[in-house]
Length: 133
Image 1 (tube, rainbow, N blue to C red):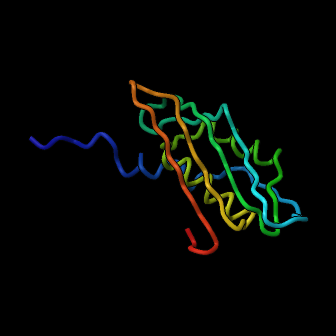
Image 2 (image 1 turned 30 degrees about the horizontal axis):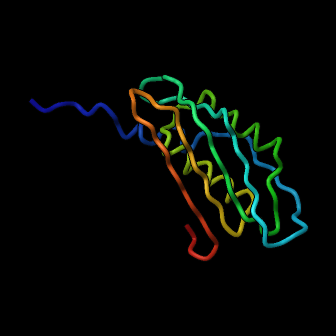
Image 3 (image 1 turned 90 degrees about the vertical axis):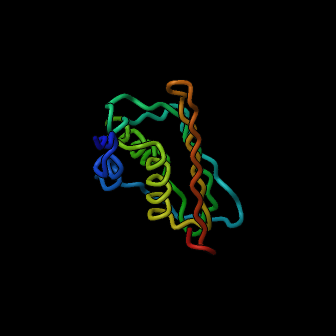
């Protein structure tokens, strides 16, 4: 008897295209420096179980012409609170949206999630203008 898969394509794609608040930017005045933003109490929801995922997101980016406006970034991050999305997709979606908003020289998003069932998860996604991802 063939076992039905527990995780479907619908689970895998959950949250990737969801509407989230706009990340605003402001004009950068300097070059050649890095900004690090830490969101220590990040939450989202597992798209299969509906259970909350807790973690810390760290964003490091080298701005080009634009910097991220922090209040809008906070509102963007808070919108994940009720969003069903896998942890790995959260990190990659966050990076994609930051790159689209600020068009940085480079960016890295690291998601460190609270252990569930004794398993700790850390996902890192990177992007740079030089290589496109």
